[in-house]
Amino acid sequence: MLTEIFAPCSVAVIGASPDAHRIGHTVWKNLLAYGYPGKLFPIHPRATEILGQRAYASVLDVPEPIELAVVAIPAEQILPVVDACGRKGVRGLIVLAAGFSEVGGEGRELERQLQAKVRAYGMRMIGPNSMGVIDTQSRLNASFAASTPNPGSIALISQSGAICSAILDWSSSHGLGFSHVVSLGNKSDIDEVALLQIWGSDLRNRVILAYLEDIRDGPTFMAVAREVTRTTPIIAMK
Image (cartoon, rainbow, N blue to C red):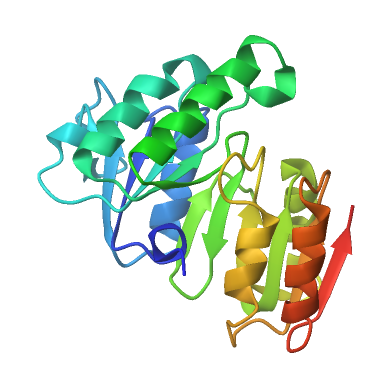
């Protein structure tokens, strides 16, 4: 059920920052403000505390288990951090940085290496190039979204962070609520098929919305969608 992504017991934000202009600061602030009930650990190489919470230089310095790590650092710094997460026993990653396969060339190779490390450590990953993940039931806002969604029964998948952000902004003024919101980014690991497979049996979801820029395995997508839509409608735009 991907509980390590949507309902983790503990979350570290790697790149959490005391600087309000940094994405890592926004993610950390969103987690605190949304009322996540689990344990939270900000990771920063120099800061000793961020928004009143003790900070650690590395996930390896945290004295307790970490289930989910939100990685809010530049792409070129990712690989050693993923190694540290693997050694720590982190089960889920949300990688926010751009600069991977969407830019081609070296970015594509960097994403291949990232994907290989994630698989080698047995982790699951959203991203890279993601805006983040929101689960309204577990009170998890592991994103840098400017708007916080109301709880509801719509599950949203968006491959575009800009579209995801626009939907959240619009929905808050129209009284619509969400169960899950996922910005897939480059979907190097978890993709729309994996989400449909777990969301189709989630009774909180009355409908699944998907904005997709590509579908890599059309036959599998259609087969899973046919099964899911026996109980839960899917509205998808490619």
